[in-house]
Image (cartoon, rainbow, N blue to C red; front, side):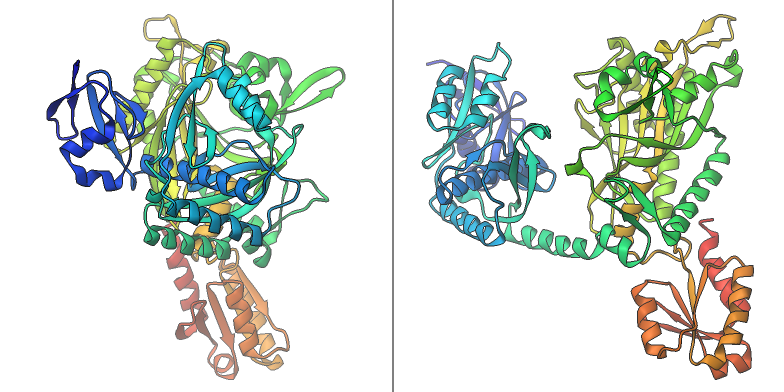
Length: 638
């Protein structure tokens, strides 16, 4: 029998008979690993532990606690959920059920909406399946056999998926646990008993294949972890996240609204929300100006011919809105880059002029499907802190590094940690292989030069160039995509952008597309949830509120109000004929940083009694001292 050589995780090499399973190899090397190994990678291919090996290779076990191991675990749980649903509700059809960022889902064709009570029944049946300890068994069959199998079961969604596979795919894999069989690439955990901690969370509607012209399915979301402790911690975070939901806080704090009367995905900012937004935008303008950016502004609509020239019409038009003016077609802009290139083209540029950095707080519109809209976090109209840097290839490294430094500075100012990903060329890209290699290398080299740790996100770049994504982490350790740097050799080519080099010849500049905070609306939503609405003093729409004890204190209260206004403090006055305790509780609910109580003592001394929103008393202070306190708390940010 043929022997194969297998390199183990410790670098040692062992010989085994051809056909040996992954499980047997690991068992002979370190049997204790099997308790926590979800699957394995062999020569970069993901395999179940039951798979047999036929060639020399390198074996890497995938721990169930790792990110990849969790994804495999969660996908396995989704199969168990699908089985449980069909066990309890015969006739329900299943469609797709992937693992996602924090869990998994499965879509079902069900005549009703799954109720909370039904979710409990499904979860109980899942627990039974887990205890039955069914192995996940993989079977490879021809595509025709798979179609016949699922047709026999009436599983039309699986048949459609099979029929839509490329013609060169002749075989597919099926996975079975107990009596349930599903179409799946795998891999899966060895058996159902390896699943120890999961929870079904909620139900939502989802169109088949995300197309609103298709049937609406019922999507059950759940989550799973390698241990009960990790699940309990996650569920605690979910409960805290409900309290911090920016949509609820946005209403409670009177920041914004989304009105169906106005239109889905369109944000209406109230006075306090507009002040918060203005603070952020003013900070952005100041920081960009001191970094050598020029402020520009482009129109909301541009001729369709321009969008065709850029490639957006071919690659992005399903996300765009269009209109017509006097027989001419226009696209409402989803991005700001086209206007910035037109500004660049208005004159001959020299290498001495570069880099040129155009910054615009540009409002854009994108056609997001109703099902994905989510308050400020996913809207149809939003404003990006967009900039485009046109530079020579030699300037790329320093410009990318400067942007990365800017992002780091901004995240520190707003109180966020962050992680970094390098996203590479997608399938639907434009541009030459050489340009993509140059752009990707430029981004990666800059990250290395800045000594930044990063992950590779294969195939998730923009259609015109690779990108660096900065994923900030909020107070609940959730990750949000905000800042990005995209390196683009392609659009300068398409728009014939040039500069005159030191040699007197024309050369092509490189364009960096970048945002620091990203969409202002989305960033505000993340900020609201990060701080739970209790903004630091410099960001708070209302920094202080004056609370009169009785009506006779109102005249002095109005005098203090004007002093604070004149000093630039954002202040409100609550001079209602209500009990002081009621006013304090209401101000705390509004999460105002400082409550200034005015009674007989304060009126006589010309001072204010300062109370913080957390309940701490700072004692009585002169008005001027309070003004200095607020300015000191804000000066490092403004």
